[in-house]
Length: 457
Image (cartoon, rainbow, N blue to C red):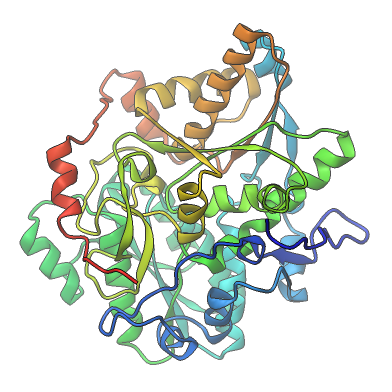
């Protein structure tokens, strides 16, 4: 049992948190350190500052400070769209005829359409404060790229986005929102970087992956004066910024006198899930309360459910640090599924450690069943969900149906990370019966696992 750390929300006149919650500070078994890709030694702040902003490098390495104050400039920006709504899904409960109470934390009430803006504005703020010219990044579904383009526009920073090629083609309207906010958007892998050309040579015609796009963004950032790389998920600093999701949700539930039995989130790199569960997991780790946590991932990219827990490169080009995480191998390129934001080969080290210790569950679901759940949710709750969020909806509905079968009146909380209004090509494929389910074979996974370096510390 970890020593008890008092739980605080730091509220004044509103429910908007004044501090981020650092979940790692509550963990007795800390996530393993990032390793330098050349020396395989733990990354120092100096090492990380060559790629990330200095303050973000500090946050990345901090696993002891339980609460980190949110700068007033960031908090003022948050006030434009936070606190985000916590909604009870009465209509969904009725449609499912379940005794369960279903709540969802809705992160789609901003132009980026997702939770990603919570970290994008923080990372852009620290870049501006450091006096940088601009930042580079990757994006899968486009929600992170959209959020970062908004944040950079707000602070007057240049923004270069490498968008996974299949999403670049499937989600043209997200691409155009990024360009509206001034971002330069390049489909990845591309011929504009050394690593992009190498990947295209090795995998001609590839639809790309987040690992590929990360490599290109890092190469571009490190090759230009006045630029740094920023990331929308996976990193500990991102989970820190996203903790506002869970803190607000817990505050609202406490006011209602509700305690969730099951907390569910979609899981790609881990930013949404990590942010949603942060205060609840902190309580579990201290023995103050018990909750079930379920990470939901696509069956086409089954990182937690079929991956290996090992040190691996965070990117396909192997230029980024190595992280100990559940991984399918940095060379694994998933099928071109419509949940582009969940097509990452690894899982954040924090959630990987929690999952490995049995503190979390994981479930993989096929995309046709996900879109069936999304459509049913949209018809009764009035929000068209993003494909990524719909993974959580699918399992929340499954859990509610189980309650009907057993007669248990459980309280279910899930994260509705974003809207699907830019994902209509995906919905079109589903409605036209052109969507298929792809599950990688053991042989295909073995090819990815073969590229995982053998490192024991």
